Length: 204
Length: 313
Image (cartoon, rainbow over all chains, first blue to last red):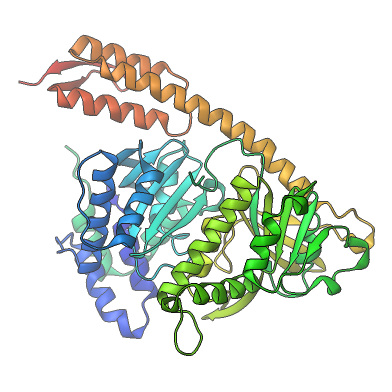
């Protein structure tokens, strides 16, 4: 049996594990909805991220872009576009990982691939350097794509752009991350059953 | 044009942050860089052992003095590296400078406004860029660290206010956290859950600082910069190879107009010696092109390239 596994599912799991008492209930509910593959409406924060990314992409493609958010925001979009112009957008990537005789298809979509770097665009008001070191995107995408030297997160907080970057040799192993997830989820039937039901890949 | 840190270019110079707790030989290590001009913003010169005080030095009291001293070409004759000790004090100078420039940068209690933090962050980036690209010097900025608790873990951060630390790291090729392990001092260039760090070409993990008090030569950063430059040249050569290869790919893909030319382009791409992400990017380019002209790939085997293109029905 092969199971599908994505950075968003792993992030949702990590968020649940790290949630303090105050957030535990909502984090668990989000994790269960992710396990059930329920379509979720983008939150305002997610929509901010989508809008930002769309502007950067449009600018890179030479399309006309209007900015109603002010000069600082426009400067951020232009700065990020300068970093990623010429790259390949929305690149699917995947890797098969075996844990305890079970096979997992880890897959995701990288924002931009450009030579030595994988780029991921973020719009976050609460960025702190080092935030994405243990992100499943950092660990997973570098495992899937053997060519780039590292991954760079270009983070806009609305008025500034920050860079959080990790070179390949400095990130953890995706095999360990997947093993940790599988051992955890398999030990808890209320989560494990949902994972098996909704994430099993049906062989054609 | 502002050059981005760690872009793959054979850059002959290095920008770095060195941070850690007090008493960890950071200033002495700063002086191990080649031909230093030491900007003693923190008045810490007196604490450096006499035998290492070999550098030219300025003792600014304001940010404007830093700019004026660095703008005087006579001060930079024979200088290869600017060392700022400490970056935290420099940012304090910049705070006053920013508030004097515009009331909007400050608050009534004398602290920076949100706009003021932005101004200081951008000015720090501008200063780094000016020293690196216009004055053409290496740059080492020394910071103290502060400790914060996250559950059981002690986290070490740059001792600066707010989001300024994000701006500081952004501009640097290298960020090393200095700590004591056993009786030795180490500089860490790989990030961990305890601290952020940043490596670059061939510089990663932990490097032991030589004990210069026991007679070792104080040349740690000089040697480190040589390593960065050597490895940077190798990566820059790969980057040139990548650029040339992608030009060829785009030219091949542009000429695809039928199943036969698509197959020839794909096979040509598969036979290339790829570098960095070129294999994935090239395959995606041909996929996008064939899709746009209505071709479908018919797979005939397990190996890449085993198959043919057909016009979509």
